[in-house]
Length: 235
Image (cartoon, rainbow, N blue to C red):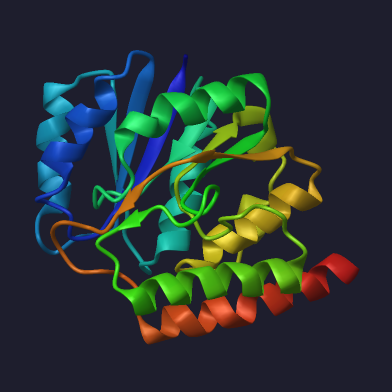
């Protein structure tokens, strides 16, 4: 496999030394860390790791407005300039277990254009989440599917693998969502482009260290975005 894994970071200095070797243990996988100006020194930790894994780990240091969507757009556009045939995306907080990467990549290389690491394909597969967090996430997915018409069981999962040619069809420069709404918009655009969307089951584990990036503005944007996408579909 020739797979590049794009990982956006903001204050994840303690998690990166655990994540990077767990990803790069897989043959044929490389990493691109997109650091969003982390004040805790995550970027410096990433640079040190890049020196330990020459040719397999690259670091992008972003400046300007911060945000998950902005980081991913910059990272995915850079990934398309490489020779990677598969491009994965995952969180840096260890909630996405790198052991599932080969399964995502295999499904993307043989059957689908984009593959989602799904928490809800076979019931609810999450660890260390309080009941209200599970309720919020499952409600969000049902809400998104109802409004947008998307079919996957886990539309908000950020653990994904793309075929290069499928990602090339998406209007990355036209993506306007930030925060976790970015994930919904990307999936919606993939469906509009005719991409075959598949899922593989994962077990999601709540972050071990650091703080969640979910905030009130992020949640509000996630509520509004499905309606904006539904209106876009009708045009």
